[in-house]
Image (tube, rainbow, N blue to C red; front, side, top):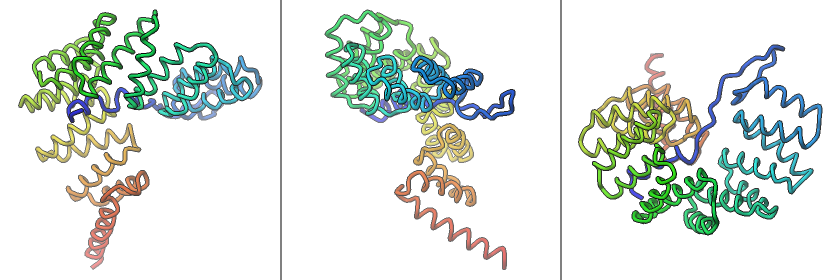
Length: 352
């Protein structure tokens, strides 16, 4: 996989962060914290959980929490259910989904394998293949999908996802003809999929057909103007074609839609530094880290840029975050020591 394709396919499709809303206060004055979109339902779920200890109520509460995006709390309830009833099909399915959402793929695999033993073999096989795909274990994913496709799959949405994912696996392995074959199969099911258009665009970049790639990415954002990955694709291709201003505008559009788009943030930072627009680069990194404050690499980039422009106190705070997230980050400790020395020197000058 080349750098262009890797950036387009980077984590946005595989990991989507849960949106977190500020704490809310209910009518009793109690603070409801966390990624809550339906605080009234959450409050009721907790109350029922404390008052009635039946599997039916527990499952209903888990459903409310999953729909609210609070996967970790839902997992706690589902564990309670499975302790009581280890072969509960609905609990296994829901737990597998919640584990997938929080990126705990190995544990999700265990749920789906257990689900296969309950009789829902095909559904479990599809989910196992998807987990392998999401965790980029491509050989296992491809083998699993091949087994799945030996069956008749009536759910067209599931079949679309399978074809698309298999196409993506072939792109990552460099088998572009096979990727085209499976994308075309997916296209017959959903010709108006903006996600598929982005994948077609990536395929054309691999083939070095930049004009065709532009058309695919444009089609993606026509179908869905909020598809940030489509705008990233346009940014990359326009940059390669020499239209730097349009590439910059496309990258900014992606970040307007999703400040947490890592690929877009990295592109804008890289281009801003090349053009000596350090303020733009710093602002882009700060906005990104508001969404994903645990990205040590991006935090380290911010610390270095703050140092470069002389904002040493801010750089010193940022390097602490880097070392807290990844104590072994190469060069981070050296930068901390250098900052401490320079700040101490400046302090001495002020005192004298």
